[in-house]
Image (tube, rainbow, N blue to C red; front, side):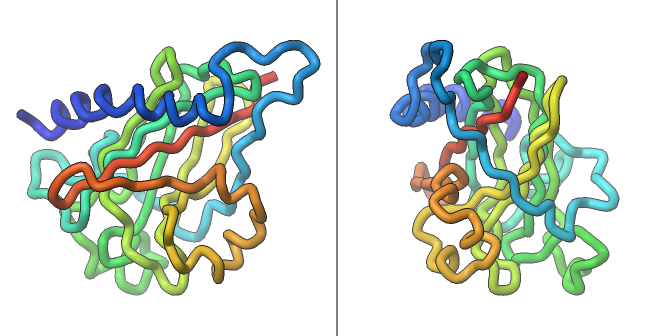
Length: 215
């Protein structure tokens, strides 16, 4: 079975669980008139390493470039859903992610270690949300960059309305409490935390939902 086929099968298996997790904090029913709505996902800095040049292969499987060898590191299957403040799905939005490889190195000329990066890792990927707002990525757990906690950069670009740029983190990372970028979030950090669970040898899965304003 190809990597793309495995990604599709795993994502379909995990999406019900992702939706259930989201339902613990909000109902799937439309919010009634006058209700405050869901809390919007907090924005964060784009950081200095948004790709200056993107590989031709920019799909949602970052664990290999084209038909090349697999990247090093622990695989992470990341699934989620994009909704508006009324908990209605946002379809056809572009979700971009970019991150460091397992060594904590970015594909960017500003990273002094970029020549040592894992050439089999894609570093940047895109997914388009389905009619139900669902999306998925197959990537790796990012390595530590400098003193920062593990993180993945995200940009959400809807068909209409403003884009959202943010970062996601991982529960239990001991560096979260000492990171200035995270501390500025206060309690809002909970909206950007992924609980990664072991699903097989060298593979974890987690889910993250984004709430974007749609007027």
